[in-house]
Image: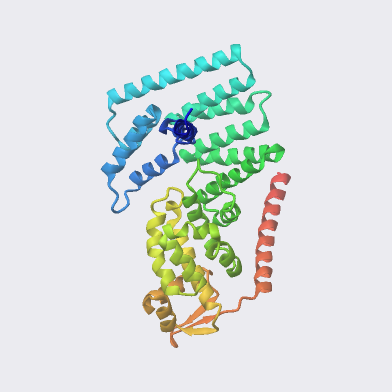
Length: 414
């Protein structure tokens, strides 16, 4: 063989060896993560349609929801939405969806029967998960609950699989905002995790618990769990990482001390990578930390709009904005024994009349340790007597306890 022929053969071999590196699009699709159900983004889109927020295109939202319903054959959920929004049911569409649901359920039942007859426990468990996930995908809440509970109660199922089934059941509860079931499931999941859950499941459960606490407005407890999960977040089936950071920043801004706020939020690398996507959060955090209260107050306008687009935070938007204002006033007044109302209003970028009304309301509600001298036009900081406050609280609780004991004694005598 000539040198020229050998050179051509070598070039051919090199080209052949390099081809496997160019994966076809089908191979890439196979390796991508499968979608998780129920679709939490769909739940938020339904919320946006229901909220009727300003600038919300109801027709576009409805079209988007119907596309999701058709793509996932969500006959039960379509029926729920028709009842909720007063839509006229499309009988042809509903029949098609129900037919697809029945065919898929029949197929999955066949897989389960085959696994029970010809395969082992692992294949049976996979088939049970398939049936349960099918019910979760189409929006059949009660059927999904029962299907996942069947897995939890099945003998010889590992702790890890029980946790997975319970957490998927919990996701169904969050999709439908069925909070009674969600609270119960969190308790059950925590017991299972204590019995033998691994690191990943423990961290994911913290995110689920944090979301439930946010819905129930236990913001302080939620903030701690969210802060712990920033560096270990893997719970993408519940929300995106960007949204998780949003929840963590909003809740922790209200409660973290300045040194921790700087370390974890202002300069936290995970937060810095995401927060530019939310300019109002960036202004909120920097305005508070740098004592730029005018910037902080301006950010609250956009923050309110942001809160209105999230199904977990929207019901608490007024509360969260109010707590942000109280936090800013408290931080500012802590540096002064007294300050002119006009000076403080200038710092916050608001009118003196607005600030006077605002401070009066918060002082009356015992949210601020201050008093207003209307004659002198000043706000005076009041140093709280911690011991006296604790003493008064103890007396009040003691009186309540004595009253209950007296009532109990009368009942026992009878």
